[in-house]
Amino acid sequence: MAEQGADPVGLYRTVALIRGFEERAVELVRTGVIRGGIHPCTGQEAVAAGTCAALRGDDVITSTHRGHGHVLAKGADPARMMAELAGRTTGLNRGRGGSMHAADFGVGVLGADAIVGAAVPIAAGAAWAFRRSGTDRVALAYFGDGAVSQGVVLETFNLAALWRVPVVLVCENNGFATSMRTEDAMAGSVVGRAAAFGIPASTVDGADPQAVLDATAEAVARARSGAGPTLLECVTYRFDAHHTWEHTARPRYRTDEEVAAGRARDPLEIQGARIPAATRAEIDAQTATRLDEAVRFALAGPHPDPATALDHLYATGMRPRAGAL
Image 1 (cartoon, one colour):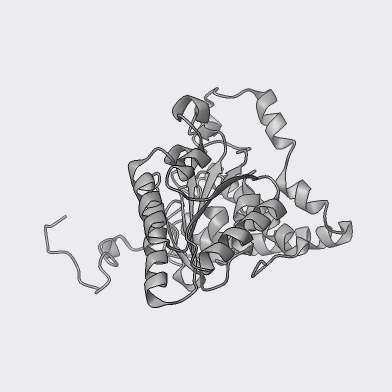
Image 2 (cartoon, helix red, strand yellow; image 1 turned 120 degrees about the horizontal axis):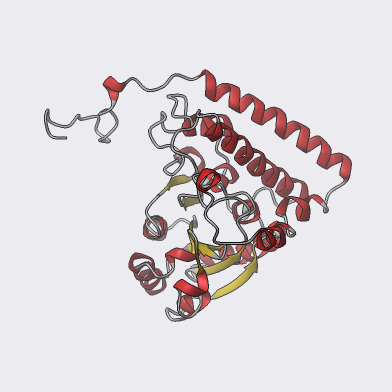
């Protein structure tokens, strides 16, 4: 049974929050407030909403370069997340993590990682620590289809299965590793990778928040019971660019017709159809207000002082030696 946000209204609220956040973030990229661009997760909201709804507050996640939705679904403050993207000291990580490295230990977000697949062993390590300490906490790792051939991911599968650690492995298969189609980059299948290590795996409709929640709840229960890892391949579709750089460069690796077909199964509409229209309208209005406030909060925050660029490099507070960098 899901631990938080399992009701249809709660799932819709999370999907709507992520969708609205990404739309505003893209606009801030266009106006130059967010430097360097972002990797939007528009269209993939059901995965974040459904998986995090199956977790407890003390469970943890690790995320990817396309991780805004994961961080928000786990409970991070959207205002501080927006400030982080905008590089402000009021951000989750004082404006130093940015879009691809957001973390919030307070809600169980151990961090996002821009290196493909690198967050998977971190989650498995946390899960191993939970098992060693005798708690029933669970770790969940997100990664894309492009990560399933990375050595560190496969090594993690091996150890997670061997040591039966309580980790849920969530592959967001959106069909592309940047612009390369999955079938052109991967021999075999995602679930086949897990089967090779004796890890139970299933393919889930990643456009349906409830389907993702149901599958994740089973995997989480299995992990808590001591039965070890589970892999979920959530088949989804990225509506927007791999990176907002595409908005100006406009590479042509998929047709307008394909994108339209992908958009036909919109997580926002799928979950929105499950709640009363009046409730949906109320949530939409509340979400819009909340995100307007988030943007105002982000814009009001100061940029970090360049003189503090070497601060926060070490947990002890120690600064690097003069001339060391």
